[in-house]
Each structure stands twice: as structure tokens, then as C-alpha cells.
Image 1 (cartoon, rainbow, N blue to C red):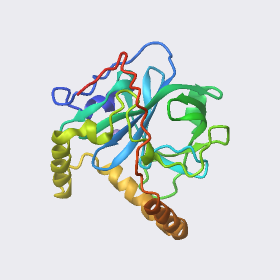
Image 2: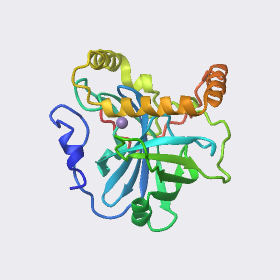
Image 3: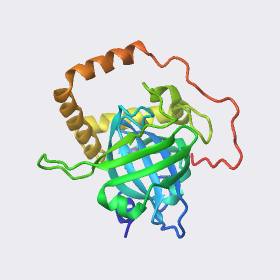
Image 4: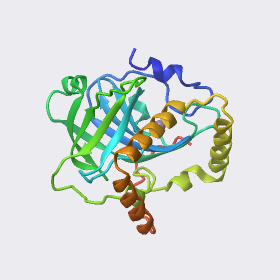
Length: 259
Ligand code: MN
């Protein structure tokens, strides 16, 4: 039941993504996938109850507690999605390139199922890039038409805090050390362009929900804090992500590529 939506959205003859399969046992791993689809976002996934509970985070996670990142809960993914990296071909749900941006283990700070149900999930991450205490907090949305899928991903204060964290400085796969462009390759870039054109034309926009939610969230934010948006924008342009901090020692043991 948990993976019905995942299954329904995909054609497994077309996509290299793994099939829907419930996992037994309770390992607690997490993965963050950088996903260049209709819009770039990061998919934050926690292994729990035999699936990967998943949230799409438009701006990606941050190690700065001042960043409260919008996180839209999406359909559960199969655990085997954990190391999926590659290209989802044009015309398919989520078409674009996928990078395993971070992975590791997580520890719930309490009863995981109960915290998820209550909409206040506190946990500790032990990944390569993300470490320390975080919370996912379900937002009570007052606006009409809301799907009730909006959460906030927040870093708690601890030894791993990095003020002014800039996620663009970490554009590499923890599996293969490749950048997003390297994963996408030339062919991927072409697919990316063509899928973009299709959605601009107003045809079947499979990623509509995400684009719309982001647009709404952006509008809301613009209204709420023009000042902070302006200062953020200026610091973003000032701090151009020049060189990417990329470890040179590629640990390629047991790496599984799906493209
Ligand atoms: Mn995604």
C-alpha cells in the first residue's frame, strides 16, 4: 500500500528507477538526492517502515539553523531507491538527472512512527555532508487548496552548525564524486531542455505540483520578507560558487551506477 503512488506514477519499462518493493527489517539509513527535474530540488529520504519516507526540498537542506527549508512530503519510495543515480528519460515522471548528494544513517530522537504521525520528527543524521540534529516539522496550512504536504526542515544548534551554509559549494555525488553536469552528460542536457519545452507548452505537466508549490512558497516569502530576500540575493551573487569542494579520493568500492 505504501508504494502504490510510487508505482502508479512510473512506467518501469521506460525509467531506470527501481521497482516498488517493500523492504523487511528496520535499517535506518537516509539519502539526499539532488534532482534536476522541471525545477532543481533535493529529495530528502528517511528509511522507515520498509520504505523511504520522502520530502522534496526546493532549496535543499542546510547546516544553518536560520534556514528553515520548505520540504514537501511526496510519495514513499522503495528502499532500493537509496543508491539511485542517473538519468530519468524525458517524458517520464521526474525526468532529469539524479545525484546521490548525501547518504548515511539517521537516529530518531524518540519514537519515529509517533513523531512522524504528530508532524514533529526529531532526528540525528550521520552522513558525509549532513551531520547532527535536525527536525522536520509539519506546517498547519491555513491557505485553501493546500494539500497539507508542507513541512519545514530545520537544523538544530550543535557542533555541526555552519552559518551561511551554501549548498552549491557541495555539488558532487557521495557515490561517484561526479558533479550534476557530469551525471547529466551531453545527452542528459538535451533531454533536460526538451522536457522543459514540453512543460512550457502546457502539455502534461507531471511536475506541476512541485513547480506550483514552489511558486506559491516563493510568493509568500517575497511578501513576508522582501528585506531578507534582497539581502539573500545580494549575498548569493557576491558569493559565486567558484570552486566546488570536491574530495579527490573517490571511494568507488561497491558503487552502483544506474545509468
Ligand atoms: Mn525529486
